[in-house]
Length: 592
Image (cartoon, rainbow, N blue to C red; front, side, top):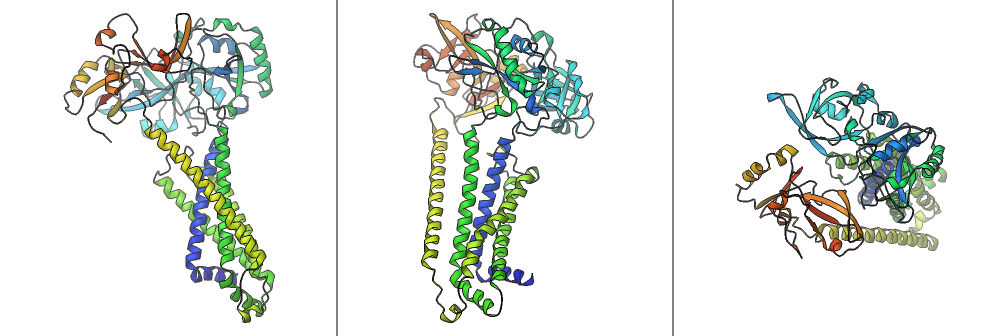
């Protein structure tokens, strides 16, 4: 053992630059591999945290002619679906678009404000997704004034004090709720990030919003808990045979399809409107990340093997001297393999340090997965075993090659590579260059795509716009006073309001209307009259909005050119609206 340690440390003393390059290259490769595998684990483990995940299904309405579907449907549809089969143990509606609401706790000088997302649903959501409660009871959702909150929010709001029974006041009207006050009924343990459910405040949908005749809108998601995964086909067949789809507005060739919860993330779906409220990922992207991770590891192993082989002329005299002094070839080979494995393990430990520092410095915020080491112990442990295996496999050839020369070479001093050795090293270097160049080209293509997205002309002014989220009360009742105060600043040119953040969200309100017997659908954004001027959107035809448009009984629209040209593609439109959740004002300079 002492000999192994002495030889291992001697390598670092004798070949400092070679060892530095070896360890540095391997550590970067192991760090990249770890991060990629953490992301792959994040995607492949999506929605697996729920104890009944294999029996949870999302209802989708598919169009057999248009080959698309929708996961958002009228309010009456989920109730009919949930009651349609004995195989359905429970079901829940969920409002799909969670908005941040301004919430306060306490009174007077002790009042504290938070901006949090509130999701309304049916009480059975607790049973379907298997919430774990650390305080209170999930049955509290039977009371429409009770709410369940995540443990992380309870800590932020109440600083470790008991949360059950505490009052929370919303300064905005929460959609599907008729009251602004809520009482904390339970605290649930936070879900991991890789699930369709977010760590929001959950409340029950008020009965007045559950209308059995609402077939015209599209406002709900529906999850079902079946008695068995195999029952999905029977539920679909029974519902498709017995349900009258003509009740659904705009439905011609629809049929029900149940999507397993574990498959939703990989559907990469867009509904009929061209958007989706679900967290989805292209499965090809996940496979590509997995493939790239192993390619990086392959390059690192080949690079290490080349380095070790290149050191042969400088190490062969020492190795053969030990053979002359009686060391068996097997023992020398074992020491070289242990040495190779040790170098890889040192590089692996250094890779863990890199990841810890990157995570601590929040330099990998673009990675969706949690890259903390404690949250990924299975990946960390498996990669450690892989690092050991890489060291052994990459050290096999150099170990056998260095010890294959006869001791007489100690006297001759000729240590050139054999023709076979030269061919192998040339092949390894060639493989290393091919894979490296392919990854570099791929990275350049991604960089070009990223540059294109960042610099593409969006048709409005992106540089001089600052956005602030406001409550309905401030933007509705006090809008004029708010604008007057802002306009006192000479740096502010104009102020506008919009119901959603324009260009900052993946999904917007949708609409459908008819004109000259032709149906149009697309996205709808409610805005104030000054919106187009603030955003720098130029009109090619017609007149801009005016303040009088807000006061008449007509709906005033501005269409983009695609929609005005009567094409069938989905596009964005704007309409007049008198209040808002987001305010935008233009500045004559860039602001950070």
